[in-house]
Length: 419
Image 1 (cartoon, rainbow, N blue to C red):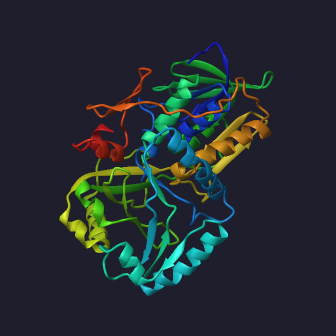
Image 2: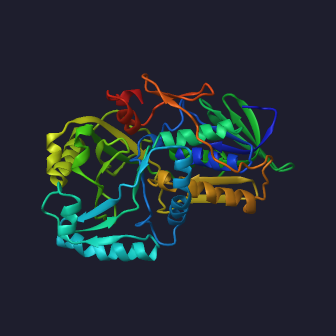
Image 3: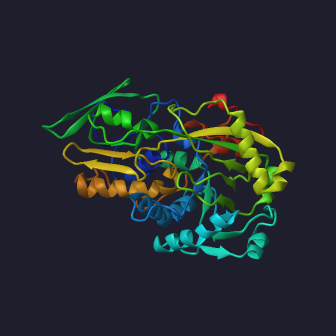
């Protein structure tokens, strides 16, 4: 962190949204600094998600969330290909198990069509079991969403961040923001941290589960984080053939429900739950009652899962708020941009969110980049190590903080207490 210069942008928070924003703004010529309070990047909400890249078929119509997810769909696959990151367009199958759920399928299909999410099709029971022969025979109907994709939820933002670092961005870990102060005369921020003070033309709050706390430091109170905990079970890779797509339940007004899906590394996962909590941390303790409920859901949905072993369990906490939509709030009078309340679709919308942020920086704040933009995205070489880290050629090493990545690329399981 260079305390002698004024950055174009300081980004607070090194989760998937912060990393994608750093990546996109740096590629467009902005001199950026990212501040992360933890010892490792992608260590909070982004270290406990599902790794699913959604199409937005069920996002609220007219919402900023839907817009950002759809914009992400336009750009993310080109980025994943150029960065040589793993992904699989496995598709998803939403299964109804009774007549009440069955009656909702045409409504969900119509919603998807209005949202311009193409290729969503209602399946007959024969078509369903042809696609998913291991499903319980108690289904009453289904719809297929072929565009649903799985990615590595940890490696994707980490490589984006390192791509930005190679192109001049600075990343500071173990750096806590204690206070901020706006200078009206030169319209810049002074950001006070435990490692010194830094100046910036614009501050972007991407601090996820702590977004409301950073807002208060800046003198705002736009929303309150209401953490929502989700727990998961991870199966041995021997279960990889029990499903061919992500098996979604029919959502309720309260939750999207528990999913049976595969990681990009072929581990089958059951989850998440949706539990309101006051704790912003992912507890290392897994509730045995919830574990049993998830396990029973998996066996009820795909009976042959009972033949396979659970190799790990983990918990994620989502930064929900009292609002259903994203809380992306621009304050041009003080050059402050809030990117909060991203809930469970931060990965699905990350590049779309970053593109929306770029438009705000350019046109609402009127801040021009101090460098030339980069025309190309280039592969960043890296190697997984035996110690559960990833090493980059420029001497940077990252601890794998997401259990899906760690379990997928190593033969042993990760202890939740090590996260």
